[in-house]
Amino acid sequence: MIQHILFDLGNVLVPVHRHLGFTRLIPHLPKDLAELCRQDQAAFQNLFSEPGMALETGSIEFHEFYRIMCDILRITVDEEQFRDVFCRIFSLDEEMVELGERFSRRYGTWLVSNTSRVHYEYILSSFPRVNFYRDAALSFELGVMKPAPEYYEKAVRKFGIQADTAVFIDDLPENVDGAVASGMNGIVFRNRQRLIDRLAILGVTIPGLKEQLQ
Image (cartoon, helix red, strand yellow):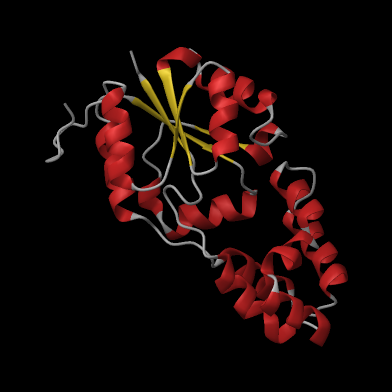
């Protein structure tokens, strides 16, 4: 029986619009990198994947990340301006948060996210309603990221729950596969209605929701 529901953050509760950050960054980039950013955002993002991972595992803090990024991208923006570009890429999925709030009336709800301190603090400050969960397993605090097995072990231990009583919701299949391998149930998030339908198969009901699960 499902007793706990674990939510990913980015692209589940808060859609991520990285292109907005890239668009704001382009005017500050040298010509060659600006062109790369316009033509191939994946290749552009790959330039700073290593420091990005270090930031999201807590190996470095934002000030050092900012310094490294200035060197890699050959930019001269000040730190606060860069923080704004880096953080102002999220929106709130009101319907998903409302769903999470309803779940919280009956189930243990938890957050499981690969994220940095600066992004997490920005999201909570900008969208306080998202904080409906009991506790969070954040990669920058755990020192490890999904889908590493150690991440799921640390998350379950932190929450004090049994893996087989939980369902793990994430937009990335590899992260859900990692959760399933750790003993949890898993659902790849695509949209709200599909999530509701998949949860119904697991016997999860949502208090007060018009589309009551059968």
